[in-house]
Length: 350
Image 1 (tube, rainbow, N blue to C red):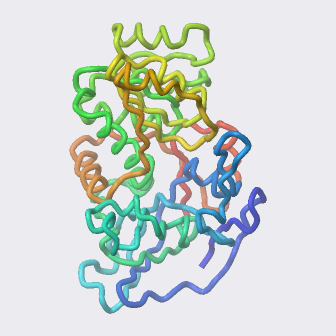
Image 2 (spheres, rainbow, N blue to C red; image 1 turned 90 degrees about the horizontal axis):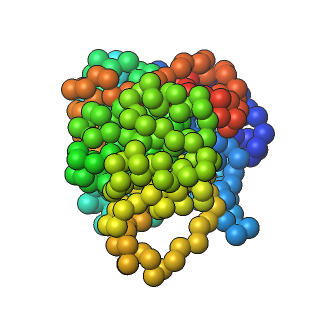
């Protein structure tokens, strides 16, 4: 089995050749068909998150150990399974839900494994899809992606699920009011596509990169704004016809979250998704006076992934633009993503 692993944080991934694992119990072995490259992988690769104020959250603080095979957006073909598995067969193509919890706590039992305090996420806490084979601990984490291509289906496990869950958190207002999307990378373009598929009024997109702003317009944004431009908040509000009720921050930087807050009308909501890091200063007085909601959103639940797959089957245009590269180019893909050179999603093909 070939994989490309984080051997040392910040250094090039190392090519490993290991014995292909044999599944036991409820485990399923997949031959990886496609593995998306996510911006979270850049954080795992670098080994650190910026908490702001000079504070950091390190890889080890999240329970991650090296070497680490990253890759949490995976589609694979079933090649073997343990004796307890009864609901898949060899040759099945499946999308993997990676945000696995302990399965026993109250959070997991109510269907929100992504919020478990003792997670076992694929590509984070257990080996992921930057490999030609992948062990999934239980067949319940495998979703039939039907006739969808592997490269289109793979990003649904994170890029799609994350933005779908964030849009749901804004609520039914998305059908009547345009929302602000901060960031036009892979998540941003996916968010635009899903917003349209969910019957949303439209997206105003802010990004510092003119190429990505143009990509957002091509994807269907009703307006784009350069957040570094003077009067950016006023331009967003004008594009929203005077009142912005919802914003989704897919960057998670101090400047992006502040712009989102500055644009909101009284009673509006900002959902923060991105993990760029840093900190902002909030006036506590203005939160109740403006009646605004500030909410975090972390990926999504297994139930939401099922909803998303059903939606995509009905609306075949609900995809992020994808570019495929061979697994051997994993290092180049990560470097290009970190440098902001990628439009949409890059998917590795073993």
